[in-house]
Structures are given as structure tokens and as C-alpha cells.
Image 1 (cartoon, rainbow, N blue to C red):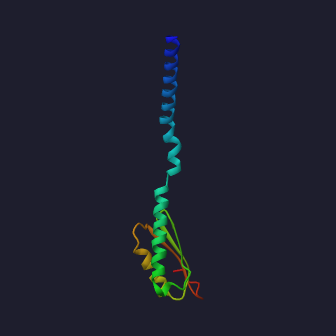
Image 2: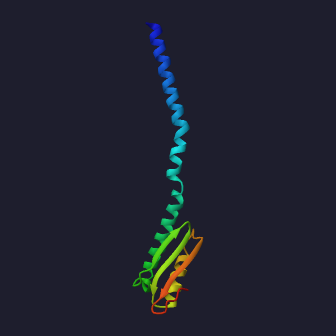
Length: 116
């Protein structure tokens, strides 16, 4: 009877040890891709939000639908504004936000098709 109990304890210990080792070995492999790039996406969202809020805070730019998109630190501004000065204000606002690697200007002025 004692021998049977000892065998059961040894088998249980072996199973638990095997499961713990599998968990340790494979847990890093399965969870890493899920979080890969999450910090970069978070930073892009923060940059986009800061620029968009700053544009809305500028009263002269409120009437315009200026789109802000950020991918890997590259900001793209698009939409239509009335004048070149409005375009320059939007670009200056974007330049003041930290973490930007590059700004792509796709803003246009009304009636000119001006992209720069």
C-alpha cells in the first residue's frame, strides 16, 4: 500500500514538473507576438491625438476638416484649408509635438489644388 502511494506521488510530481516546464518554455513564444509593436501603436495614437487637439484649440483652424494620421512616427496631414497661412499654422502645430519623425503634408488650399 505504501509503495502504491509512493508511486502515485512520484507520478504526480513528474506530471506537475512536466506541465510547469512546458508552460515556462512555451509561454514566451505565444505571448510575444501579441504585444509586438503595441508601444509604437500607442505612441502613434498619442501623437495623433495631441496634434488633433492642438488644431482644434486653434480657433482659425476649427472650421476646417483637417485629418491627422500617424504611422511609426510619420504624421500625415490632409484636408482642405482656405489659405497658405492656415496650412502653415497646421504644420507648425504638428511640428511642436514630440515623437514625430517626419510630417507628410497633403493639405490643400481651396480652389488651387495646392499640395504644399
